[in-house]
Image 1 (cartoon, rainbow, N blue to C red):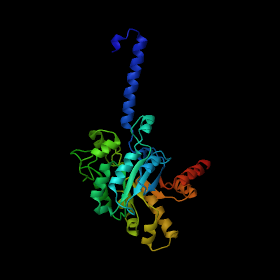
Image 2: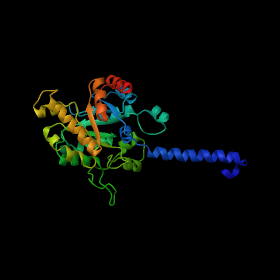
Image 3: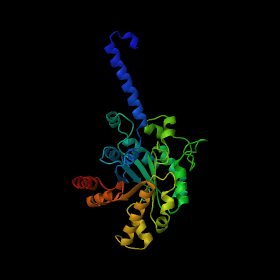
Image 4: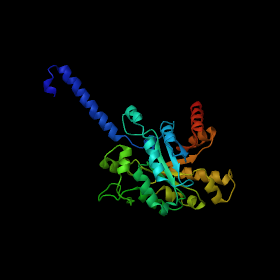
Length: 307
């Protein structure tokens, strides 16, 4: 093509445009398709919501909310895979894709399911095949349960894989996920692994610590390869497991123990914050995944900026 351009300046312009296209494509390929992972990798704090509303109207609203993730709570609400699928399709924002210039959504979708981690492999498979970016596992008390959770989110690895263990048990069949993510099956295979175990992975395994036994096994759980974050939720179950009232010093000590384990093993640490002051406090302590409400998140960010 360059031979047909008689003027050297014309040839230079075309060459620059071609180079720009190549660079742009290369940059897009390196972008994490999970916005939560992208920010955690940069050392940033991420903020999110929880919902039981799987309507298309709320899906559109949350897709442009000033947050990084939303998680559907199906532990305390009906297990509704068709609703979850419709919600995820409703979150697909083509205008935002065009604006950003890549396939990373502004808001990732996670979900939390019953029953416990060691019995829910089929639930995890269904959720990931729909196209979710992560799964929140309830009541993880031991390293064995953590391993089962991690394996359920990973495909069986090829021989010679750089990140072979813990080898996965997830069955292949990601047609719905590739449609939602907007990539080929081959590309999905590359992205559909657990971060930070695989630096290119875009799936997040979040394990909830909700019992005294979980606290006793924190180091073993947090050090399990493939675990992306620990989550204390609203601390209600942990409080009951301790046999104390909400707000008791023992509960806060347990939260700080979880935070310490996350920092020691360099994984995400998630907590629920109910007010702006609580949001600011937890961010300053080092919690880097904050679940709250939009008003509390916005006001908490404002408080942090003032200080």
